[in-house]
Amino acid sequence: MRPDRELVEVAAGASTSILAVAEGMGGHGCGWLGARRVVRAVVEQRGDAATPPTFVGAASERDLPEARYRWFGAHATVELDALPLDLAEAFVALDRQAMAVPMPAGPPLALAVGCIAIALDGAHVRGAHAGSGRAVVLRRGSTRPEELVGPQLWEGAPFEVVANAIGMLSTSGRAVERFEAALAVGDVLLASSRPLDLDDTELFALVDAHADAPLTALARAIESRVDGARSGGDAAFTLVRCVMFAP
Image (tube, rainbow, N blue to C red; front, side, top):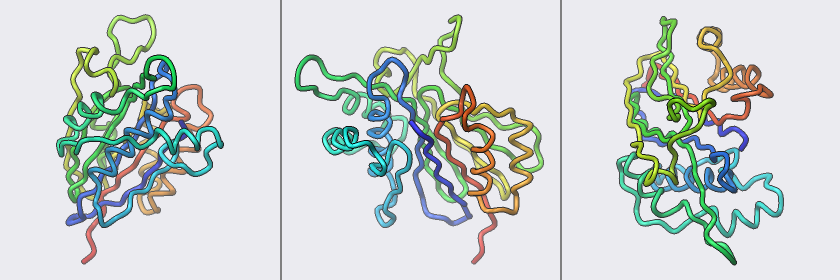
């Protein structure tokens, strides 16, 4: 799936918003469809009803090949019971209700999706994670990121194997991870569907260099470093920056 890049400038007193990045797990058919289902369900049921949600990457129907567009209309939106307000509990509900797609013949298509979902209440962040994602806070004036969550991998495997995802929660033996953080002015939250191929020193340098630039400029700078990379080049990511509230 191509990147979902949502950019949010957060100020004290801002209304609650919801962000999500997701990625279909390898070995499970139609990962793009699973990612789309999860993102749309989380955002549409938890977002601010007064502000229409924006979907990009695989969560959007724009620029889809015709065959995928037909699948989008038939399968991307799933009828769900009301999701719990708690994001981790919402992941469990999605695991039960949205990760099997009926097929014309044969068993349902099983989906597995790694996801980070974030609820913003002003400059306070609460989130949930299952899968291969990473969320960090890049504190202004610091040189090391504050790790919120990282990839859930099988220990002892000879190569990286994702141990948890929406669609695997009932069998993985792993819990949905919760996290929260308070952002101060100048802090940047980066959440990605898997770790970006960018070391933390370079990431801090980019944040510092774009401190007074629009957040879109920082996103484009990150893209220019990771696009086409062997690992992490097509990861979905989202940025949140805390700014001074102007009354």
